[in-house]
Amino acid sequence: MQPDIQTPVRLDDTDRKILSLLQQDATLSLDEVATRVGASKTPVWNRIRKLREAGVIRAEVAVLDPDSLGLEACFFVLIRTAEHDPDWARRFLSAVRARPEVLEAHRLAGDIDYILKVRVRNARAYDRFYQALISEVRIHNVTALLSMEEIKATTALPLE
Image (cartoon, rainbow, N blue to C red; front, side, top):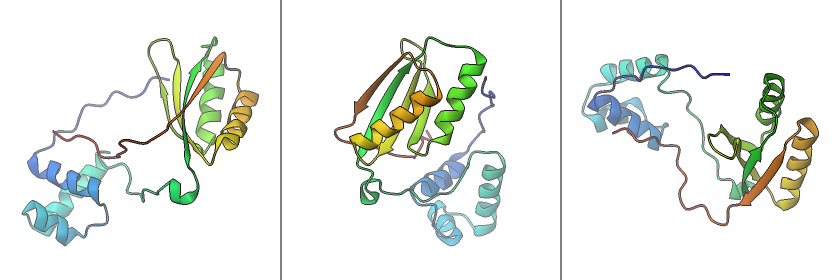
């Protein structure tokens, strides 16, 4: 399951300014974005539309506070598997993608095959997640690391 290799989109300084503003607050009005980047509305709107069409802007979403929703436990789950066949990978990916607790999943190089970022209410909720996952797909070794403190979290990408 090879990801598509894309050619990076060429951005000029105005594109970067627009994207930087939208990464901070996607609810800004077109007037406000245009004012802050020093351009008129129509060219800014056309740039935003082109950035969406090019896939640079994938989505505009509300970022929720997990603690205020009672999702106080963040676990990083390190997974090693002894199986690497396509059927196992398909079942594993399907199981991971179906679980709303999994905020991120990455396939890694090195000793660990996958890492998951899992957000749940508490350790019991994590155990329910873990039991459900291993009932769906065979996993050789799982290590769960509880985050004691979130030091930095951002959705903003560096645009330099």
